[in-house]
Image 1 (cartoon, rainbow, N blue to C red):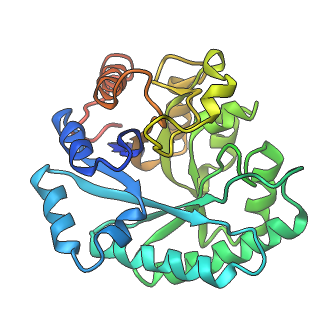
Image 2: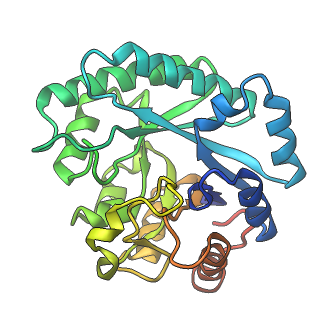
Amino acid sequence: MANFRLSCHQITWGRELDKALEDISHYGYRGTETFATVVDDFAGREDELRHKFKSHNLQLTALYGGGDMHIAGKEQEIIDWNIKIAKFIQSMGADRLVLGPGRPRPEGGPTKQHIKTMAAVATEIASASLDYGVITGIHPHWNTPVQERDEISSIFDAVDTDLVKMVLDPAHIAKANADPVEVCETYGDIITYVHIKDYSPDLDTEEANTPDIQGNAPSLAFFSELGEGIVDTPGFVNQLRKNNYDGWLTIELDRTQTSPRQSLENNTRYLTDVMKFDISGDNA
């Protein structure tokens, strides 16, 4: 039986960890994901980070790692870094590692060798991470080697899916002109973690691909709040139900058009009013 627990990614707040935790906690979320930069930021201070989460009644749901897994010659560096992340995840009481493919996307798209290299690296990371009780998933993502629908097929045909799972975000699939519901149905057995946001073609301008003035990672300003774009979020979530997905549903927004807190409020309203979710509870 499907069960959704609601979480929020901290990407919208950039490196403002305390503010992100305050806002996310205010709206009643149970969990939050952030980037693996915290591994270096809190090296040797893990107790301090655990205290920050606990004081806001939040648990870590995942860390976003990955990197240039497709580039020959960088294999061991990428493997070692992600194993370090997995150890940190375990120390925080969490169990999901998101492998974001490297950016920018290779000119002309990934070659067969790129896919082969990535598959080998991801499989080794996933195998080692299981020693720490951490499940690993590749995240198909715009402007990376796993962007187009056929590239999703290529990488998941190449990996050992007993080890390497999928982290799915319908907005990235929609941006690549594919069907998020179809991808969700096709890979239902290996989806281990889910981001949700929307994609708004009317925001898809040249400016949307440049970092914001504060230098926060969020270019990709064509991604939008839930219900503002073309993604069929209810249909996508319904397919997750059919898949009997039992896990975190993490709202994410790369760059807000207003403020991180306002976008969180808007997304929360959508989840409660449209999706009828209990933000702090379990949801079938």
